Amino acid sequence: QVQLVESGGGLVQAGGSLRLSCAASGRTFDNWNMGWFRQAPGKEREFVARITWTGIRYHADSVKGRFAISRDNAKNTVYLQMNSLKPEDTAVYYCAADQARAGRYDSWGQGTQVTVSS
Image (cartoon, rainbow, N blue to C red; front, side, top):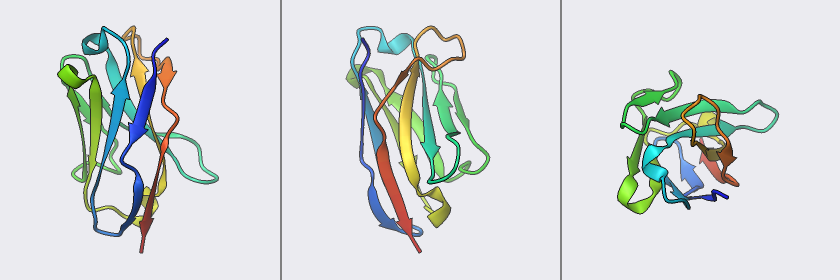
């Protein structure tokens, strides 16, 4: 059973930065594609960023140039560096694992709240 634990959320002023971390259990983290998603109140969950097991990165247009996903396989951890935060970035952020690399995320963390004040 894979466990994903997010941390690093909090309250920040617009223009500020946060770095989210997601620590994963499991011996084969290196082989997983990992993603970050977010869900704002009253809205559907949306894709934020993805990093493949080979290190290729994808970011949603809404965060491109401001957010950066990365991973440290030695620490079984994926990160989301968030800069130039905007109030519309306020949401619960979730990390997820695509262990089979099949384009489907099969394990999810509990989420961490990010609140950006104007």
